[in-house]
Image 1 (tube, rainbow, N blue to C red):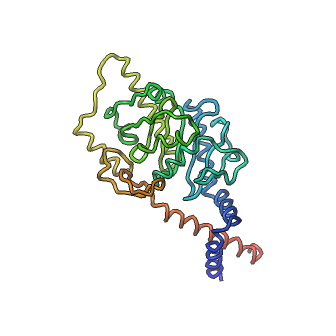
Image 2: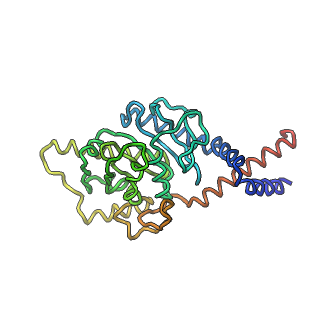
Image 3: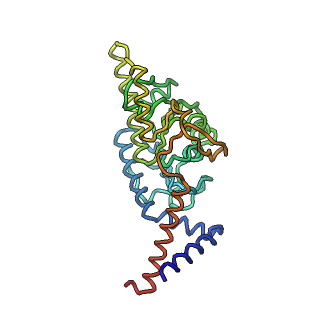
Length: 304
């Protein structure tokens, strides 16, 4: 009986998935799911870390996580990242429309959406203003590479995108030429944006990048030349990155191709760190069917 009910619910959801009413219902189910609750709590924790480390000031910075193919959960506008609560977060679709959430979402979400559309493996994006990295951004200098293994493994070559007015479509599009082969991008006269497979991992990239820039600035004050990792040792670092499933422009030709949602073209330079979106969505859908089946069976048996 339970198996029959599960099959019927699955078909009902599929049949109704094209209607606006069912989309709203499914969005609510997604936004209130255990997976969403975990993501919201992670965003809150990371927001506090960004504020405590002085990577954001005032109401600056924004965080998002792509919970499924069609929706992201993101931070609101006009709110300190140190004061966030789960009630402040919003569910937004890839057309930048807020579906659920009491507060207006960040005006810079277009930047995040551009990354999600261009990099199918991106599941989390953080934009903030860490001071040492931003010092390079406002001077339009790119930090030299091949100096510290941690930077090379987790970030690698750094890109610098040109300045555009924050919150605009033009601003979002400035990262498009770089984001497919760089998980960390300096934004000229603005700050930094990083993407990863989780919100926590994206925050790690911010930490690594700002610590690296600070170390370079300190080393420059010593009056001695900065010594690079020997070129023949860089290959070993790239092998570590490959094992970890991290992207790097230097591995572009060897990396598999994936579909760019923004252009419809296939791109190279991305090594998947998680399973494909299709499988992820199917698993989330099946989890929804199971939860609904359990609720119906519990109601029918009086909670026994």
